[in-house]
Length: 342
Image 1: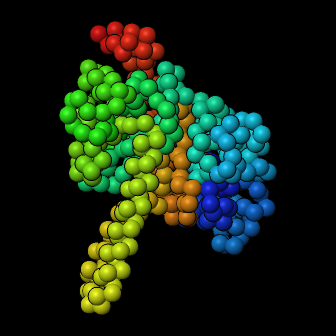
Image 2: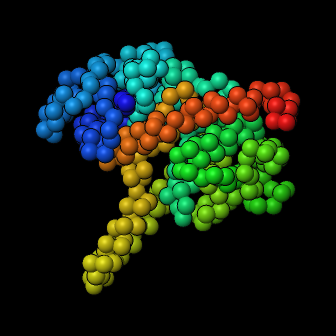
Image 3: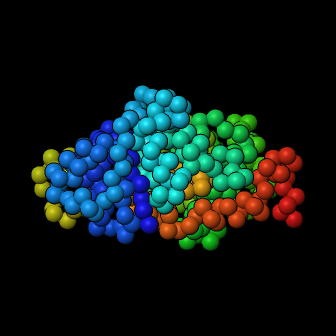
């Protein structure tokens, strides 16, 4: 098994990313393919005392920056490390791909190069949030504009992933809303809610408010990518702020025991986004993992672990089989009623 790593994306290329790959060697059995400027990759490997022979190196000249538009990956920057990594994945030269580069370009490239599974209208970005139970937030940033049918698709995709990877027999699906009452919500949310209520393939438990997400109200929280990204970034910022402030206050008191400091450090690590590696793109023919743009070496290590777990779980095969039964295109044509379920 091989995992392809775009080493030129994000805020810290290529050294921190290469170092993350070196760290991951202790935790993954897959061979790691480093894609980017060959000279810089070799220099980074040498700096950290790594053996070049432990990795495959694929040279690529171009780099997609955070300022580039989504379509650049298939237009002006086909020679970029991200485009090359996705092309290798599509050609069967690897089993999964990881990048911490431009989200829009990665999602566009994954959709057009790796391509969606037949029947999936939109792939989605899914992030696992470390609350009382691991909650999947889907979509967490890929699809800013959606329809009610897309939200139903996200529920399908999330349910299959959580069953296969997390072992949940009937993962609970909720839709993000501004209240639990049936009459509350935007027209989009209200329409999607009705579709999910009548769908036998979704264990729908109703609406969930933002403040309820940490308290095991659901296993999958469905929303559009704009809402999901705001929730994700707010959660990350708030958890960092609170843990940093609490640690500073404890240290300032001057009488904290080692046990208290260790407990606080454990809490900080629990909510540290680098410990979770990244978000998975679900609905594609091959696994793609989007690591945070500011990923350090630890985040890259965990993203590679996540990618291997994703690939080994064979979620894509389960989605292919499920969508043959669900026949979502027929469902849309029937106004949300799928006769093939009967």
